[in-house]
Length: 255
Ligand SMILES: [Zn+2]
Image (tube, rainbow, N blue to C red):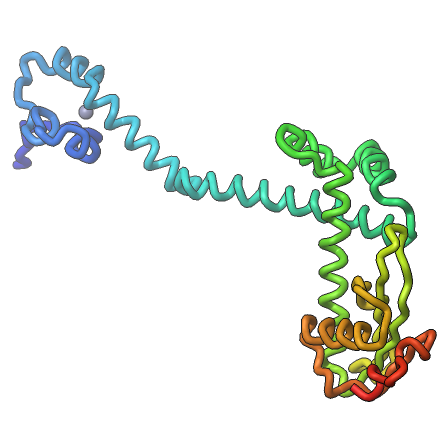
């Protein structure tokens, strides 16, 4: 003969309710036994706060199991957003690079180029600009100058990496005066690359306090120290206007 238990608990409330109402009570820690009013009591329990909260907690747990936790979901959305933003910034940098490589004035043409690309259907970039325009303008003159500087730093670091790997190199430098009448020294390096090919690259323009041989010498040494270039690998120097570079006392050469 099978013995049927006459004690009844609410499965959901026992599982979830105890943590919600530690005092327990009928259906949770005490069994329901009032069978005479069973239907009425069951309806009351089904509408009770503790039962509704327990059901909610149970459903949330089931959803989390299926789709990952709330934090995981937020993280996922965040990652998608991050990826979209990165793609948009990449597009902006590529536009900057396009203008710079072709010597097209970037501060006056950047926003129009971006508008053109967006009108051709760059949805990610369009979405990014619509979101960004609330608190930042990535198509402004300031922004494009920053992009140029970022591309410049990246290009310089790539070149320096190759130059530092070379066993020897030579320098070419020339002075000039810019529109603000500041004396400047443009510096070029020539070396043999890892694939055995000779290469020549412009590296930087540094301001000069004077144009005598000693100042030029100091500027070159400071530049190489600053960029972590081994001066002992220097095997040749080329200057236009060698008289100044050598100086009356041939400082640059002798040093
Ligand atoms: Zn319940």
